[in-house]
Length: 173
View 1 (tube, one colour):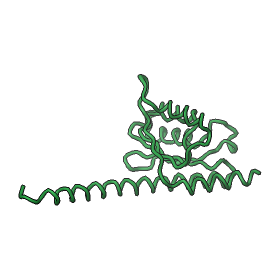
View 2 (tube, rainbow, N blue to C red):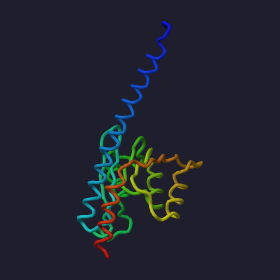
View 3 (spheres, rainbow, N blue to C red):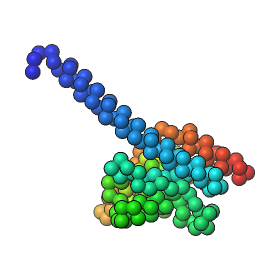
View 4 (spheres, helix red, strand yellow):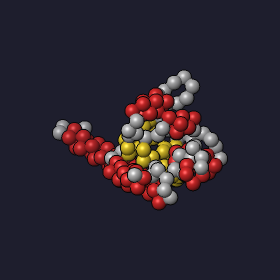
């Protein structure tokens, strides 16, 4: 390497990282926008507006929203329905190398289902306001001797998800 070339290599490396992570952010935003659209559908159906999208190899394999009222079934949360659809699509209950995008951090029931389904990454916009619920769900996602860890990360789109939830609960009052 010629003297003085270090800065060029550092600059090119930095640009490669920026390009890669910017692309990842755009993909995450795209999938989260679809989850928010699912939440909007739930709102239109008078359901708590939560949406979920499952992605494998950068392809959407399932989309869902809450349907508890419509189906009169307490387990019909967006995440559970999305897991069922994704499993059916790939003909396997193990959703290995799949990521889920949800508009609200999952409840303990959904957290357990995500872990059992072997979901790799969870991306969400809003944290649950019930701190006990959040603590339990996060404990479920932690690594243990039986199941793999579900990684989770909050994405910055919370204003849209929050607006839908506020609109729903204002109509209920």
